[in-house]
Length: 245
Image (cartoon, rainbow, N blue to C red; front, side, top):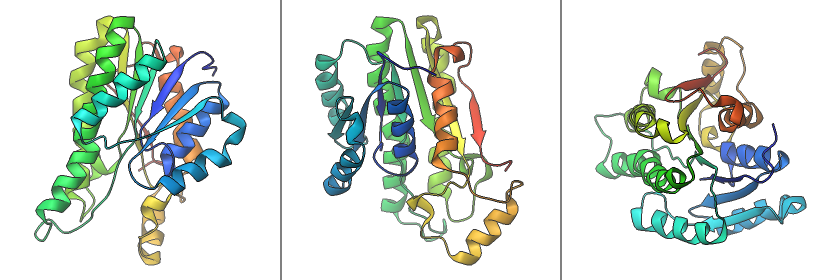
């Protein structure tokens, strides 16, 4: 798939699944804006490692959970580019705990980044894309939003919310040739699951019909398809990249 002359935004685009998606768009010719919220050092290292794409890779630091910061980002980036073609809502965190002992901060932080952040960025993107009568929005949700793993009430709620959000918004913007879909990864080899105990990793792999965890590339391929013009009649739906979970 060729994304020459297209501009894509990937939130949380410097690490993990986001990095895999960012690299895939760059290799397919897109100009890529990767956003991040915390580690300046890791973001700069990411850009250094992709120096071959330096003319097409832009970094921006802000918090997607803050509506004003999202608005400021879009105002800035749309002064630089006439059209934003693609938004990938990938920013996400986990703060696992049993629901009986989950703190208010553990609930709020996950909902704010994963769900409110998706809404904030989508709202700004839609306002821009409606003027151009074209757009592709892809949310990186999770099979956890469907399965509801123990200790992840906050995470599961946020990911299920992304799917519901896309269904509603797809009906609002379809006539403007804007599609919004979800990719639901299963267990993917990234730092997001580094804190899982080895016994739990083994147990989870046994639950996956393909008997392995996925790669960031395998998620990125699904994102690129939904972001392409070939997916013009697909909206409000979900593709699982989960090895059969």
